[in-house]
Image (cartoon, rainbow, N blue to C red; front, side, top):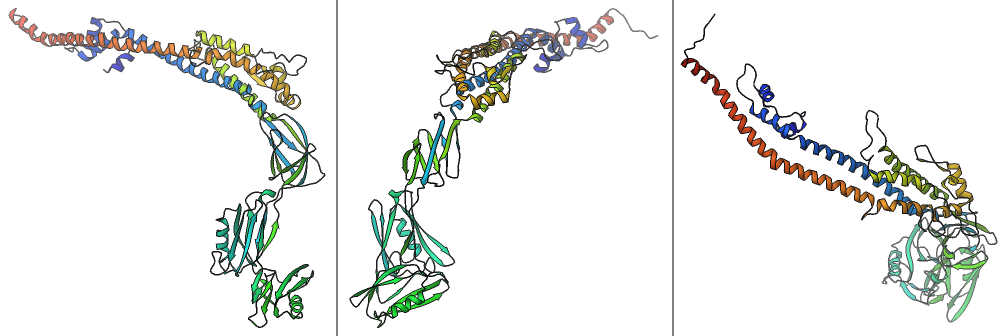
Length: 553
């Protein structure tokens, strides 16, 4: 029989007669030594089984106490969060009367109130685009342009065959490698490909300009315009043979009519209007094919699509400019997000307590409190089918904790001198205790307090100097949860030490007593077994010596 089976057998005292009766049948000679020794050892282990029962009780106490410790710590964590200036009670929401113009977020603890915003114009980002090329890899005309930042940094970039900027793809790479605070990319559509250049940040300080060199040569072509489109009012100069002529265009004019006007001027050049899949264009060539001319319209130019500008707004009547449409600093703790401009149209921003976040924190406290008190109360309840209370019913720590948790609910807030409050007890928040001490929340009452008296709610939990309800409960629980010498730590340490002592006691008992008893009993019963095995032969010998013979009926 194994040691574990010995320990699980029913308790009896050592009785040699009963052991022999159990191991030697009336008609069966000999002793079952193993069973006889096991029965005797089981009786000897009676004290050990008592110690093991004590260890089982200690294990149950440890499990229950650890669960209560965890639940109590959760309540204290809730109180610490509600007693923190940057905690859930300080959470804020911002409501805009017109979020299509301006919306906002507020940092924790921002002063509540209403502000008036007027957005005159949004911040914009400077951007330019080039004349069209057939494809991103088509060779560009021989030309150059200069890109100048608002800070005065500039770079002149030549284009055309033999230059680094041979095509649009190369041009984009060249610009992006010059660290000018802009980003260039190639955009393609049905009319061809263009280079788009945009400032890396918005605002006037990041605006930039592009100037293109005049074209000088014997053959020039204008950018394409979509088929069917016409020109606008504009002008350019053409210099040939030492004479400079200003050529003007009118709104609605076509390249064909412009070509006819140029040819009628006798400037030594021939103008031709043409069209292809990309649209219509104007070509100008030296009439003799050798005399160069200069035109103020570059063969490869740029058009500004957006000027970099600062946002302009007023905040509570104070004029504000911002390089970005995200404006910080205009209202302390509030970040404005501008999404539309409406000069003269006021937008109201209301900064208020975040009722939803506060409600979540309060309800979390109620849930954690009920969990902790429920675990404590269970120690004093006789479970169905049992006649005893919980493992910790007699533990002074748990008895004290129960009264501490229930007593903490009696806190009454005292308003600052000269002020009044609508929230002085948990009842004012709709939080009440049932017959078993656990809490319930009347959501309507809590929401009403948060909506109409949020500052009183905050003062109830935080007090005038972090000395309100949350601090009161936190301090009351410190004597239990303090890591070094709190009641939980001391209690669990004592249980652990007692359990360790019992383990040592059991080990010593096994080593110093049971092991020796097993040796002695095994030898004793083995000797008895040998004697019993020899008994029939000895009886026969005695009978023979006495002349006794067996008779048959």
